[in-house]
Amino acid sequence: MPYQPGMGRLVEKQVGDIRVLGFSVAGEESVVAVPDYNVCFDVGRAPREIIAIDYVCVTHGHMDHAAGVAYYLSQRTFVGIAPGNVVVHRCLAQSVQKLMDIWGDIEGHPSPGKIIGVEPLEDVPIRRGLLVRPFAVNHAAGALGFTLIEARHKLKAEFQGKTGPELVAIKQRGIAIDEHVEVPLLTYTGDTAIGRFLDHDFVRRSRVVLVECTFFDAEHRTRAKAGRHIHVDDLPQVLAALPEARILLTHGSRRTDIRAAKRMVERVISPADRERVSLFMDRPPRAEARRAVESRGE
Image (cartoon, rainbow, N blue to C red; front, side, top):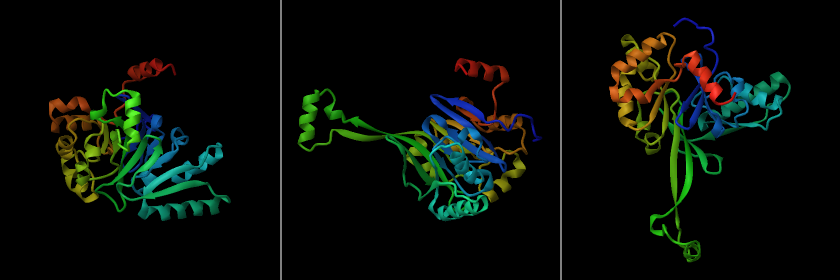
């Protein structure tokens, strides 16, 4: 796929009530921000639009996903923002900290920031009632996907209709009247082949899932398998595991023109699924994009 002017600008997608901003091209850069929730997945080359976001969750150590870590932390200091937080697999955390220490030696001063090493299924709180849950994916060593989850408390069914004083009296007897409810909002798989992560209930219940689809041509099936990536022919299996989610396909390659990629996706999925599947880097026509900006009053 030849270089196209303007492809360096971030793409913005509104999926239901979730706004997603980013760029994802295999081997070049992957960065996907959910600004309204203060979270970014992968850091790419740290575009300016993500610098103010407090939490960056890095899926794995490949350069196109992680190269911007040092710049992200440095720029926050430069513009006077509190130190940022970088979430990585625990097996990579020490190496990322070494990287920051080396950059401190090069620049002559450190860039403060918190490197948070986690294991799969070790939740990271973003704010009250919101967390990120990492899970293992099928790619490089220490590769993770992440699910953004709202944690809510809901009155148990047996106490519905009780008055305030009645509920207070029940609580005073040591009886729990609330139940913990999780609402998975968005899942980002990063780079991965098909794997057991699709069995996680919180992944399957996510409203929006950004899943990689790197290879589209028939002759690239072997390359997809060798690199632990998803091929377009794998999509029916992905959609069967995620029957309700809106799907955004990330990490496409410049080997395949986006119009050809769309045709190949339509070829392998059912007509019923076509409304809920789209390519993340498929930009809206300019007139439509302009109307969207005007409608937000920007």
